[in-house]
Length: 537
Image 1: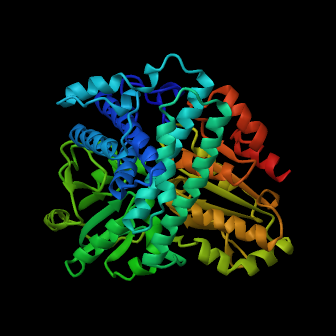
Image 2: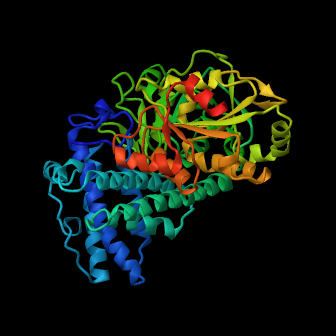
Image 3: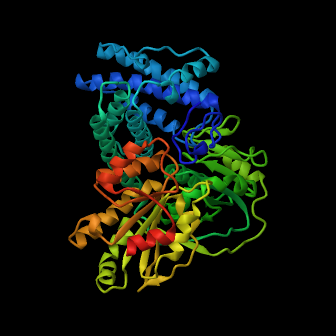
């Protein structure tokens, strides 16, 4: 296997024997083959659009299939076998409709009849199987592929809430088809990379419309970190629809529903917080789930990405849904959470109430822009000197304490905006306020990056300046491919002087990095002390 798509990759280069995420060589090869199959499907989808032939089923399958190959989503070989067969069947059906043929292997190969055969096929199309492509070109191809994986994730989230845009699907297929070509030059790939950022911005806009249109705009909300006596279910991942359906089905059953990881910000949505048994937050970020889930006395539901290998101590209590999968783990289809509820009722639950304080969420774009005049006055009066957006993924790799240290060391006349699970390094810190404005503002999930961007654009408009002229610095942590897509969106928007860490992507070569530094002043983090001194001067 050869996988370099996440920040925690082995030795900072690539996982070659077993993924640090828990992915084994078999699943890695199957994911590579699925990506290969989608490339072939995309060739015909792109050609079909030229002839006025589109297929919504193909579009939706494309994003689902790509999303399953994102880090910490699906580890089940049997499901990948089904996806590969479905991709090839769709490809051949579309090929007949379009009436053309392509020479590329992805457009013609036939899948083996069993998982072992598919695994061997996957080994032939993995990233390290390409020995001829120039290293810098291959780097840009990987940036594009990993960015597209992030776009596919956001597009799938949005589609679940009936928000779609054919332009997003068309681009994803355009990019996947481009990966079959060997005649494109560096500028061509750079153009596709920036277009990926543009399309990700649109996908995040669709998701924001789906979330706020369905569940209302988040409002500032204090979320308990303790628990109530009684039966319990904890929900992790990202998906609001799954949470809503679970809340409906658990109503009146004497079960309290808790969030974990990236689900924390869901407590700010009016249409979700109206459920009285939707109580509080349990645990911290995704990489701590094995320890935290082992101590949870109820059922566990994993939605979307972030699953780790379930430990034996809770293997019978955890359920997956949607695109998430792990061999041997109970999977729930069609939002029928009866088995999850039965498991929760059969387990002991929490023996007593426990008060561990609260944290505040719900400072999304509507809430922050709503107090913009107060913020602007504080900036003009000198009470607020600088804004930091400290956001992104958390992870287990050493070096991530940087983000908590920076937040704690930031001067008291600065405001910290945060989103995604990186905030769990400091989410429960009391940073005080500036004239009634909390110094720590939780914008939401990584899925809510659109909201953070809109806040920055609104402030720039209010001060009649460019975003790059604001007293604002973006300090990002990355782990998986959604973060790659968000970075490409920021580059597409022309945002410069971004700090990124804890380490740079292994798939970016020195020459490609130099282009990003020269054009966007993208820089790796160093130490909180040095970076704060550089930023605040």
